[in-house]
Image (spheres, rainbow, N blue to C red):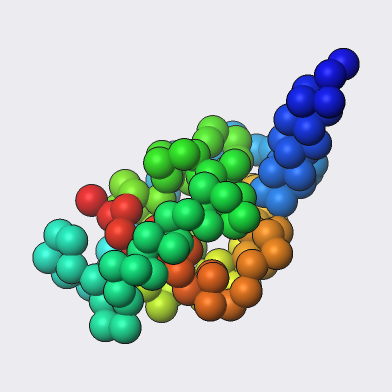
Length: 148
């Protein structure tokens, strides 16, 4: 096997481990009754960012999401989700929070334990990536910007 193949396999293994891929997976359950799903975030006009979030943060977050943050591994290149790993981030349905910027930051920092995950897949704090709290804020800004 070539060095490139070994590197790709190692990256995939790291990504799966970060997203809980090494644990027993459950199929994503159909949405429950309305009280079981998180409320929609406070409405902001399309493209409007929350107070304190800048376009530069969104761009930094996009770079981190697709790179050092390894978020794309479980949530897809464009935040569309990966079946059996991470839910979509831009569809307006939030499984573990209200989808506000502050809630997204908190979720990235804390992660989602297997016992509280509505999909059965855990997300470690910071997605298992070695990013700073400020970088997590930037990733949250990018994720927030994916909302439809």
